Length: 356
Image 1: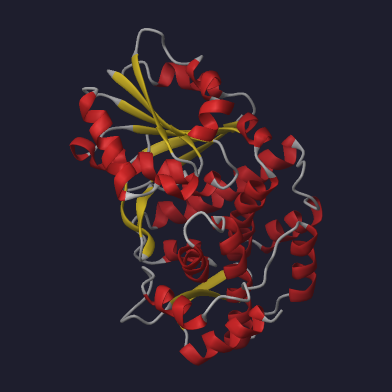
Image 2 (image 1 turned 135 degrees about the horizontal axis):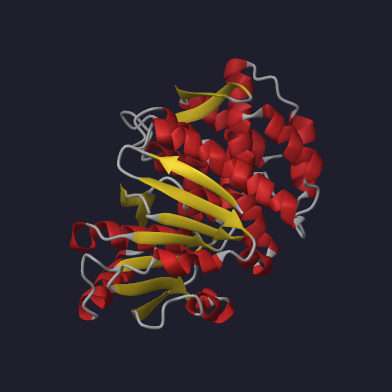
């Protein structure tokens, strides 16, 4: 088992990573008055009984089942969670267990952050994607006009990443999560990117040792940035590499129609092209694209996507200034910068990737 310590201005906590380590949870929740598990319908069928078997039998436990995917991150579901928590008498000594992927983590974390002005929560990620979203304390729900627009920075008490839960992931979810690992390598460590491109030639079955290594490395990269900039005042924005276009594509398609990682992957390729245009980024684009295609990614912008609609969504991005999109770009691999980009350049690059 690997243990990574996260140190932020608001809270210090640990991330446990390993196979079949969920038993670590049992002693960690001994002092809480009640337990609320927030999960989804998919996890209820697959893994909820495993989680429940490691909870103290003398603790009052309630379970809230949210919809799958981004449908969990709505005002209606958030309000329903708060009502459920109130109706069952949860107090400030209670704990929320977030058991699921990124959407469940965002929802459960936002409920924890706002219920009685904040109660403890523990992240128990069950997807590859959640290695990114479970770390760093960003919690939120969506608005029809933008992804993650209603939220807070609220750190968990603990993260237990038991990779046994990844074994049941469909290939689309593996691709979605691995896109964030690619992002972390590109913005921070060219050697890590080379390692990924050499060691990972298929996402169907990643050996456990390699999977744990890449999760540890990805979490360490994020932890190092979050520790320096918890509230995203400057360098934490670098973690949004690929997300400006990615979030816009998600919102435009309708949340849940395009997975987060698939959208971010397209955004990564878009940002790399912009970086080559504006900074002459030295990057082996053809080799990179071939690798992505071998992993089953679709990196082109969907042909029926309208640029002006996407631009309007990008202009609402949280990094935007005066409704001008502010992109995370690269002067070199591992050297990200924030850059306002002219609309004409954005349009030209958009159509270039739309046409392949």
